[in-house]
Length: 83
Image (cartoon, rainbow, N blue to C red):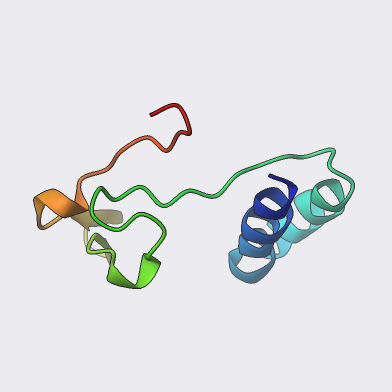
């Protein structure tokens, strides 16, 4: 669990976050004061991120993301160890 929190959550903030995120979160993530998670949720792909189908495209005209989930295998599901 600590690997997911530090590497996947923290790594995502490090690589994709802005300066605002870095200043506000990185030290807290390193000290475990701020905890987080990372999840891949498509029914058909488990942890195989390369095969995931859903796309998000930013539409500058409407200032919003257009989400496309094209098949049943791309449906979103909660991740859990309870199944």
